[in-house]
Image (spheres, rainbow, N blue to C red):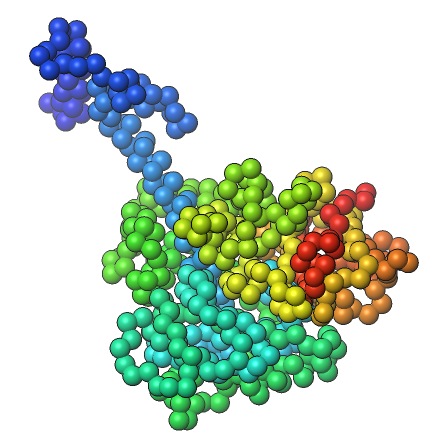
Length: 506
């Protein structure tokens, strides 16, 4: 007698037994059972019909719900592992240019352009990216000059510290050695850190850009603490014009990359819950990751769903639910959003104890670099941002059409403003014939209106008379935009001065 036949006979017997029992008269301890705690024999759901015998799932139903459970977990792992995968991709991108040792640092000495696949970077400030690997190199020092601003993020893209000038010492997790005096000391939860720094040149002239780059070369030093007495000379790797990738994958390879990260990193990389989520998919520190054919198919499905979830959250945040804090101008129903919902860099809700995972996704899918300094504008210093994914009619941008944004007179800035557009696929600068994929107030020849306002156009071809006010788009591709205010003043912070919506003009 075959096993399936025996199994079927047992189910039939159990079913008959249950039917008999239900039809029998009540017993001494029989009570009324609330309907809400009973599982019906047949349940219709979004994944199909689920079959039970007196609450016991059939083997087919068990298999069905396990497939659903694993797929849902795979999608959730994509969303919750995204910060770690993004930072890992950033470090690997810099390593591909040769930045392997602490003293080898990528410097965009001629500014960044659209060739680099880099999440929503700008083309107006000089970037420099020291990468730290405390597992490989032990305690590591960053000496930063005053005027070079930025922050350090750990391996999960969590904020560690702002960098504003001075000597910073980063110690590996679990470090028990001596800690010398003379440093500001940090003990991150991960081995690897990304330090992102930037400097604003006086203008975008080659001379001013080179002067700002030289100030970085003269003042920034990165070295192992063990090399303090004789640190190696800095090696500057130019990132300008480099076609390289710093963006995590949206395919099943994502899980292979996360496995590499989990195997390498300290336990503090992930919370116990997220660590358990990955373990349920077969990704666990100290163990091989060898998904079978079933799990490979599920991971491919899960990452596709997770990627779609991320894009839905970014383009269509649920304002009436947990994403109301993303709007800059909620009083008008404007499409302008902020990078950090509720200006909360920990994504921890108004009470500081309620994790908004959608808010975390809405940041990490299109952006990088976590620091409170970029979340809360301060008058006359730092920077603030407006991000826009939909036009005035709440429709995605069409690269074949012409759009316009109007900036009122007297932009309230102590430094400059900039507007950049990005590829909706890569979330990097849109690659056209324009290196900058945008315009800033440094640009010569901008055409202002009589009242001092200015109109910026986005189109495949420049409208007549607006060549200098034009950002090129591509028919057949969409785009989105970020408006940056460097050293914003009171009228921006109080929202008395606002950019218009981006309107379609044809």
